[in-house]
Length: 182
Image (cartoon, rainbow, N blue to C red):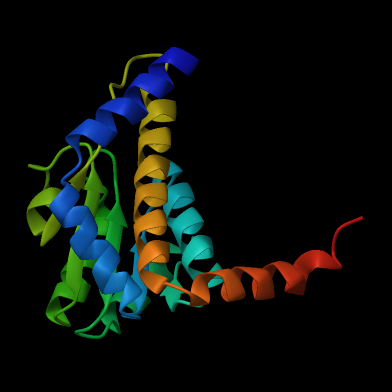
């Protein structure tokens, strides 16, 4: 499993559209509100990016409730960045969220293993991931790791663009929870 997951992350790093990745990071770093969509294992990646962006003072929203995801997408602003996580690219709720956000004029980004899927085709930018699924669902584990790698790529690029404020923001948020440790 370790080999399979490591290979998946390495292949995702080679496959990813670096220009698209930078465009997304630039848009987020500008302070554009970010809405994250994802269901099941893909929700883990969406939640992780949400937490990371909020920790550096950026406006980001994610809900595990798919009805809330759809409501948030319907209220997205033209300046919003909507990042949809779906390895298959065929998750109906995520696709519907993208349709609603498109009506608002948002920038749509798909993180998917199939750029030609409905979600890939609906996106303005596709950040393709590499993972192989098999009967034992090892691929589902690997696809989650590939999505998390994209989260880390986006976060690091976004954080670099935030500049000098980054250290102060991370210190401030770290200090806010420091007293909660035993």
